Each structure stands twice: as C-alpha cells, then as structure tokens.
Length: 386
Image (cartoon, rainbow, N blue to C red; front, top):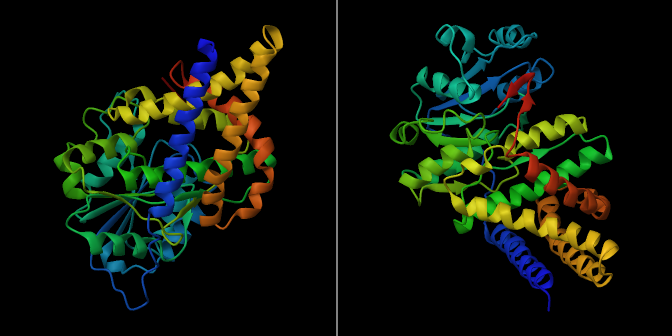
C-alpha cells in the first residue's frame, strides 16, 4: 500500500470522525425553548453594534431591535459608527426619536488623532463597552436582524445558569438567498453553526460568531478585553472567547434556539464572498486554541488530497481515481448528515436539493480560502486590511 493511499485513508478517517463528532454533539445539545410570556428578565444589557457603511441594512437592524420584547429600562443600545462614508449615522439618528435608549458614537471622534489601527472593530467595541455600565454585553452586526424574542431568550439562558456562565454563543443564519451561489453559502454557514454548537457542547474548541455573542462585563475586563489580540484585524469573537475560556473553562455555553438566532445575508458576489472568508480565515494562524488549528488543518488536507489523487489518477496512475472517488463519496455521505442537521434546525430543508453540486464547489472553496487566508491582504467595507 502506497504512502499516498495510507495518508488518504487516514485523512478520510479523521474527517469522518471530526464531522461525525460535530453531528453527535449537535444532536446531544439540548434545544433551548423560547421563554414563556410570564418570564420577565432582570439583567441589564448593553447591545453594541459596530457599523461601517451599513445604510442599506441599518434600518432593518434597528427596527428588529426596536421590536424586541425586552424591558426597555434594562436595555442600552449603542451603535458605533466606524468612519462611514454613507448615510449610516444619519439613519441611526432618525431612530433615536423612537428609541431614547439608543446612543450613537463616532469612532473617528473617540480615537486619538493620527491613530493607526488594524483592528477597528475591536476598538469600536472596546470604546462602546467603556460607555456602558450594564451587566451583560451583547454584540451583533449592523447588517443583521432578529425576531422579537431574541434578547429574552439569550438572557433567559444566562439567568438560569448565572453566575457560572461568562460567555454565550448563539446561532447565526443566512437568509433571503436569490442565487445558487447564495444558497451554497447558506448551506455552508449552517454547517458552521452545527460545528460551533457541538464544539462548545463537547468543549472541543472555542467557536462563535460576533453577530450573536454575549459575555459579562466582568469577564471582559478580567481577561483584559482585547489586549494581546488588538493587532489582529478580525477575531473580536473567537479570540476573545478563548481568553474568557482560559479563565473560565466551564463558563462557556451555546444557546441552541431558533428564537435566539440572528439572521444576516449571504454575500452577493464571489469577490465579496472571497473577502469575507479570507477575513475569517486570516486569524486561523492566531488561534491560541490549537485544537481549532488542528481541525482546520485536517479538513484542508483532506480536501487537498481529494484533488491531488484525482489529478494523479489522470496523469500518473488511474487507480488513484478510485481513491479520489472513495474520499469524495465519504465526504458527501458525512457532509449530507452534517448539513441536514443544520437545515432541519433552521427549517431550511428545501436547500438540501443543491447539496451535490455544492459539494464540488465546497472542495475547491476549502482549498482556495485555506491557502490564501494566511497570506496577503483582503478588503472589508472598503478598507484594505493586512
């Protein structure tokens, strides 16, 4: 048996075990119910929304927050404008007449003159937190929206488990897809949520998404906030999560609830998608939680070997085609169960019809993004990031 065959089989086994573990963890993670109408939260909460050129989405976001069934005297909403060049700030000001608990901060004004940053979003969140006194910090994105019980559900979970919980992750889902490519993104992102929930449940690694993240003010300051990771452009979510996990290894949880889900939009073009995923991948080498790095490496190498054995089968030895096909079949069978778990939870089962063509695209996407994510620059919100 050749070394290529042995490595291919080992990588296939590792991939199947990893994805199978995610599926198992997701199904063992209890679904958290929407709190009853009789439930009244008592936790003060600061909702922080960094925004850069979000005029297209900020109205929908603020409307969904305005509709939240959360006691307004316990709620502070802070939008911090990150050097927007569109009407984002003006639109936020219009909402202040309806939402007296809404505050608009200007990052450009708060920063020292001639400040040079790479991590604008982290600095925006840090400065916004400094303006608040609330017990619980919740972050979301300005291009997202939520159902009315979102905050009640997240805080209900927190209050049931306090004071032992210091950080809560919760689901994020894509919606409003119009093209095959956008539906592909929804499938792929749904899988990420299964991996996120299962990783937290089994304490395999620290995964979350800053569009739906909550942590205590106490924990944020106890770990020094973003100090030590403030030179990295992204990572306001997972890198912070690892810092809190290091101090409170039992204090992390995932709220598996459709009511606690934040909804956002898939990228409209391949170029936008590449920049988004490169931004996410750019922090992979910075993870102090090396379990995440190991899992990402296993997935990357598995997909690389699918392509390499296919090319080798065409150019060198036709028997390698069978090996490539076997690996791809193992990926398809494993991923179908994985993604079906996600689509069932998000009530998007109809998207599974495009599973097979999406698989071919997924192999190439993993290889390209995994390779480019650790090199060069990307553009985010019109800003080139190194």
